[in-house]
Length: 511
Image (cartoon, rainbow, N blue to C red; front, side, top):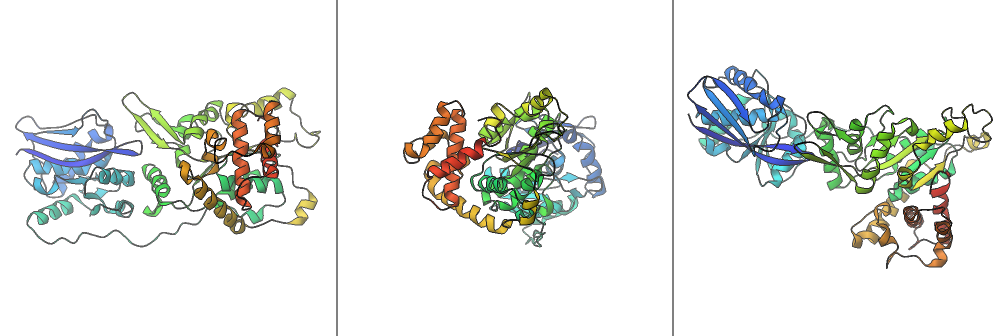
């Protein structure tokens, strides 16, 4: 009996830190003590390991067992430490060779029968192991496809404690091992979006949606019930191109932590997240009383966050979006640690013109008081709305518009969006950006991208008259560049700036 060691990983946000698992077995009253800031699930590992070992023919010594998870100052959360702790204990009990397992990362939850069960968050855990320089990782068989998404590290599947111990013993004896390969079948998930060809009329809103998709701009749609606001928002993901490798891996890591990575496949389509208006700030931003989990804004990273009936959301939720809209990430602070999650999403807001929804046109049927109208949209004005590039009024569909039928389908518009994004990527490579919506204002107004005064004349006058803030001025410039990219111009003309100014101020809420 002596000291056993192996490795595991703990998550802090989407980042991981390597954990050294040490187990010591000494004479004394029987006990199983785990130190190093384990949470409740990790503290209970001892009971699961004793039962799993007994039911696998690997008796755990009935002595005092002390397990240390180092660094001890870093919180350890989750049941995925079970397998690593069990292996370290078996090394200390001289039933597994320490030489074989010392540099292998072990991840997995143990069942009482000795089976190794799947856990959430395997993708970021394996990523962290690779970044720390480890070459082998043991994961539950059910998580192998997900773990195999990370290149440059050998993935070993574990179906039971006895099976993985037998594998390590065979390696120690020099036997040739054929580890199970990850499943290769591809799970095809149907795309979740509407086709733009279903939208009847609404030429201004369709243009705004295309501009939003091409330049990554935030969008608000204000109009009566039944005008098509929700349908338009649901069309946006179909206009966006597939995610690149880095974004796909980051989005998949968020979904892995949440246990939502269907089929263990990389998420290639931009996500579309539409929370109910009763969602709490913790659900939207992220948090939790125990394990800090990413919120809905992180689930929408590299995709679309759609807030339907946005004035019905609490003021705390709406105002908490301001910082992530600027920085593209959110940090959830706790007493012992701070977890960072990505949150660069496209925000789409939809709202009725008033609580009853009838304050459109002449508004003769509206039963809301002036104060009720003002308070209803009052949650949206100010700093939050100033960060929304495109502000559009969506009118009710008329009979002539209905007779015209639908417009261009998603596939046709998506091709223009893809070409516009390619132009942006080429032009903005020197400044480290790839979308117009992300270009800093000083860069837009600086050498190389600054537009001549005869092009920006209308925009300059709007700023002089107080119709726009400086942030609004920069956002109109971004929209103008996107319009130019959509029709293949090298830079915006005066017409592009004028249309951009109209798309920014059409709703008449804020500049």
